[in-house]
Image (cartoon, rainbow, N blue to C red):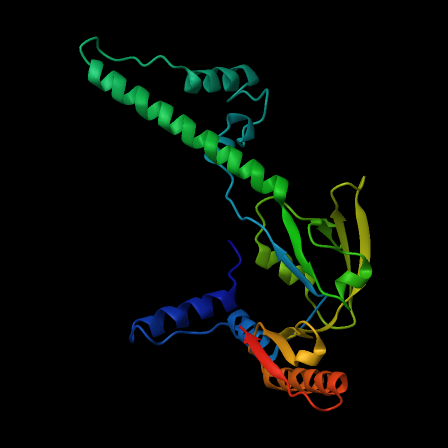
Length: 267
């Protein structure tokens, strides 16, 4: 008897029940609630990495391959020779039809070629996704960046457990996150560097900044300030205020208090 995930069963049941009420009522599970709180607070326990990757299911050409089936080579039911003959039969271009069924012959041949091309395209996409893997998009300074990680690094393993092809980015993210103060071992590959590198990073409370950039444009004497606001967490107002005060002070220092600040917001 298979084990039942009672939490998943509960959340699925409640979600289905609420959907029957109206199209506006939705159930927010624990993971969704946690993600929402993180987006509002701008804080989470992790290492300060932004990662990306493609989740592509294994192609049928690989799943249905007789050599990947549950039968063992040399078994009485499906010996190795029979597996090869079966694979050859599936790939054979000969179609046994009546001589009068020319249109069916052409149609079936076209379908077979289309299916074969589709499987080849799926295989290429899968191999491309596997080659790309899960990579670092951004490494925050003060966090993973200070441990040597850089954008473009391909994650290979976390705490000694390999990152298998097809794993979702969410699963990798959840393995990287954890309680502040705990350590995580990350193994990665970098283009132009031989072999693999493993670093041990201590998890901490990562603060996502809403104001990514605040600087003077041109000469400080012109009093033109630029603030880039990229998010709206609970600390967004405080960060914008602090940025304006800092730019105002820089403009006044450059003009001996004679020039006011002009701020342009980019959202």
